[in-house]
Image (cartoon, rainbow, N blue to C red; front, side):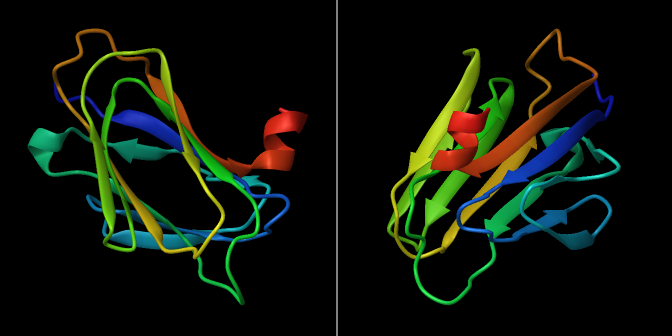
Length: 139
């Protein structure tokens, strides 16, 4: 299965009001996603076998992040999360959705999202949400 998956990125950093950097490898395109927005059109994410991935990072601004952030990922993605070279968290496997909680601090984390061909039933589209405490409460 080498079909592309439509992936939408949502920026719900409503307290921090930070933009996200998004880089899509297969199209060599990058852009900024303002807070309280979602990517349009959805990104066509190919498989890891085709060498495709999304690289998402938070835009540095004045000062550290003052609130906890969270990342909501589909279970079928493989990812690598790193924070200022001190920690790397990787995932591959099955679950429902994955929530990463990031404590307040420097806005120096990065997320690389890939899609494996190991899953037999993939939805035609899905999403990644990055938010903070207020957006989590507001849903």
